[in-house]
Image 1: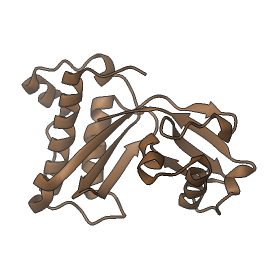
Image 2: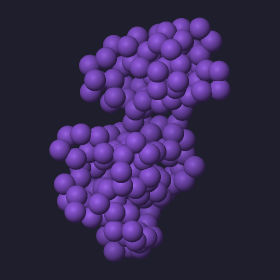
Image 3: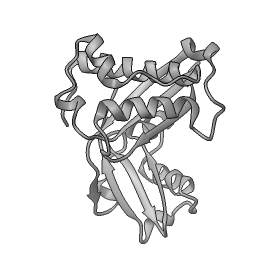
Length: 186
């Protein structure tokens, strides 16, 4: 995994926080290039490479929004900007973040490695791998930290992932496709 520098992580935190605040206020966020120029951070290397990324919002330790791209369709910096905004106002599980609560929102960014095929559940390492489960036209994903945060073992994680995909627990045991990834979480 390409490790981000502390400066790049700080910049991505700024990008996400700016996107969340702008979204909560109903305004467009400034372009990532403008933020980079103001911060004196070059948009190169890991920031410019296409990468999957998720932005997770919590308030008082509770999930408030989580949206992301599982695959690299944009640069990492652009993905964080898009997903910060979407996590704030576009997660259908939650009402939009309001301007009054922006200062109480904690932001977590997950920068993803490319997906790779897992040839069975035995290849999945709980706490290390994020998982994309696909079966019968349904799909669901968990970031690597989800199972650890919930205290799940591999089978419980896969049962919960099957439920998230609209399948039954245990449906992952036959005919499911698994793709895995790692994440740098900060």
